[in-house]
Length: 341
Image (cartoon, rainbow, N blue to C red; front, side, top):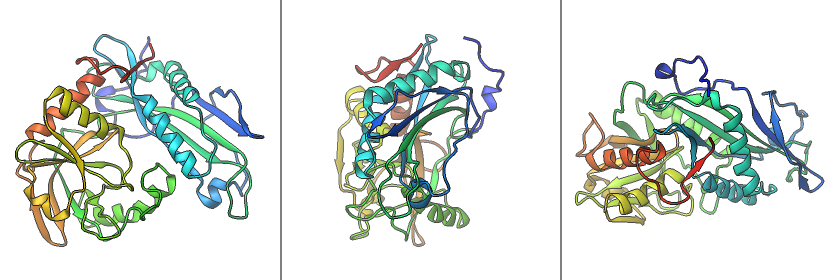
């Protein structure tokens, strides 16, 4: 493998166009076989369903170079499952699981030169997505769809080291009860943009969204699940039907229990009990775990004992163990690592 001439150590978290991407089309009730293409552009009618009614969903995962030089992805089967759930909820045709994993394999293999070397801190980010592409003027699902998957090399989410975040309890609602909060619909993220821009203008890194029904329970941020550590080292994550089932968070709960021997619990978490936790983190594909040092509830500061200088000790062990598994430094549970080269 000949690596591209990229300054991997100084790579940011942004889009860099790579050589190949996968495209498949759904028409007349069935998916075609799909293929790799050099063309990064999409051509569609001005009345395409995705442009009129935002009928689109997406996924996100990464490819890594492991310690022994292999190129792998992490639990792509769960991304395939989650895309299926999103498609079903949005009245889109399901993209088959085997086709999804095959598309991941093809795109990573075709762009192997863009996979950052082991130890660089960088990875190859993969973005599978689907959208309704035929013209629709009445409010209804599209009849034709396109599935695409591209890759882009990205640097570590935190440049210059991980610093605990300061977040605010938001006055906005991320998702409605019985809505689409548990799927990766593109519209969910469009709805969060005003809230995150507002938070940034006010000097905060992120929002904490509460349940919209009672506004007493912690749900998630605009793009990550919460993970809390109690003072007796129990790992707790909020439970709600409107929380996106993060693959990173689910993996961290297994790591906590099976690798670190910690007690884990998925349950409703009340806003009023945050003051009693020792550590807090945000879980997602991009950063794995982003530590939280302070939560501000309408002027009332809740400072986590882990502080504002570094990850808490349990959060750090979770981070190091999961990234060790992803990078081939620690033996992975069966089926977690999908080897490509």
